[in-house]
Length: 439
Image: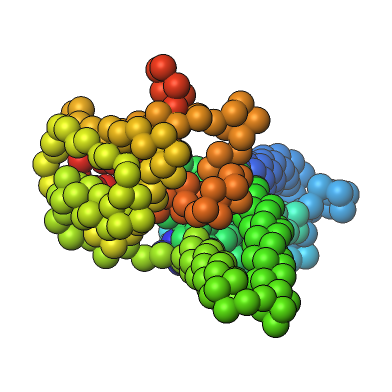
């Protein structure tokens, strides 16, 4: 049964049951000892009365009838092996030394009192005493209390066995039944916590409950934060979509009254707005959908060069300078390329007006790899810096989703994206990744 119950608490239950049974058996044994002592005392008292009665009955006083309270129920006087006289329940007449085999046997016993023996349905003691003229007197004394005491002694022994055995089995079954659901709780707690009990089961359950509560609170906080972010995303997307549609609608309304040249201009602007809206929606879907990384060996410098090659088409006047190097990373090349391109695009947008160069530096420090991107643009105001990585925090052509997307994908890799003002003006963004690629 111990295999179906929590081991530590079951051992404590076993100890408790064992202690209780020891105490119970000790009390029962003490009671049994008391009954035995009482029985022996009654036996000794019966023997003493038998001896006294025999002394009274012997000699010239034979025939004296003692009171009923003395317990004497009969006597016989033997002479030469025959009954000379008798009265009451004196025992068998044909056996002068009953229950002794002979006078010699009685002498060898030290002239003891025989009994208790059963005679005529009663428990009696038999005492012999030599009388005058070579006669021998047998005195029979009843002892009803002795038989009762002996019955109680056996009853006490049976009670000890019944209480010790039955009580132990009953207690064992009751505790087993009470602790049966406890095992299921422990199994569920071990599943939730993720490790087997390393302490007393009740304390382990308390810790499991606390761990579960903490996880629920953390999950609730994360859900609340995600809901807030989703609300911001939805509001920002609605705002950007409304602005783009308003621009497109406005230019479409101007088309009928415009000349051919103006129509081409208006159509180009409407197409540009539509393309921007399409890119905005694509970035929004990328940001909100779950992303599973497909890691492979990646060189960060190669991703930087590829991103610069694509950005030169949109920003032909912006110069990129790349320095430093790092070893290969274990990363999702597509996801990491999005991060790198968003950081470089953000710097290119800030530097486009002044055609100032964008500095890119790759470094490895211990177990971390850093990609620093610096621009000489107008920088970021203190108000915007506080919510820089929130969706739609900026009004740049990327729609304010680039940095939010870059941070999310970086964190999926176990990394982070930081912002700091650049010395001398501008902004500095740093992508930090684990060298081993462990999340």
